[in-house]
Length: 210
Image 1 (tube, one colour):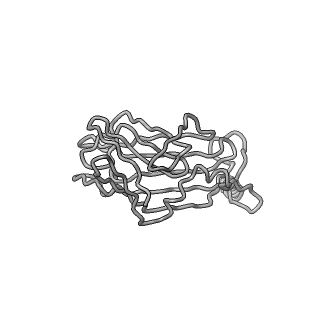
Image 2 (image 1 turned 90 degrees about the vertical axis):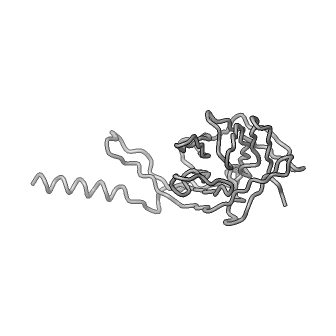
Image 3 (image 1 turned 30 degrees about the horizontal axis):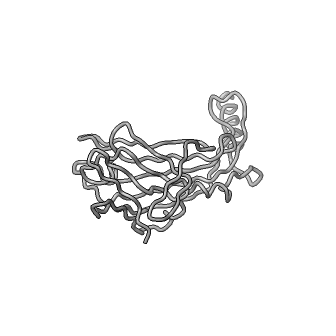
């Protein structure tokens, strides 16, 4: 009898967690897309950065995956039910073409990840992860932040004005090409990465618009 009661409760719980068409949907709006780098939808296209010495660093979008996901208001250990809802969830994966690191899992230290989603409680969320390699280990750095986004600045690069630029400074050097010591990355909310600096070696790379 106890087993029957337990399975009945479990069944009711599972059924209550199932999504339905009546749940609200927190999708990306037009104003949200001012903070989403849509140009990375060009899968396989190459973005080129150059410095004053005409050296090049290249990156290439591998995935731009937008899904409609469901968040249940029920959860184990929760005393009360919260709102269940659908939301937009975007993952962007970018390949760093100028990195070759031996003895590391393929792609682990050669990718930039951008995760963006939407919730009814905190609004738009952005998580930027850039690899940091300190032999023999590879970690990640960047930033994560909910809207409204603070400390944004303006930059002009190759006669184009970027108005929502986040300057990212790591605790350790970012690794965007072999033997690099990147201590600043310029991330425009609407356009993605637009530049980065290796001040130790007096190198400043900026996005080239072709």
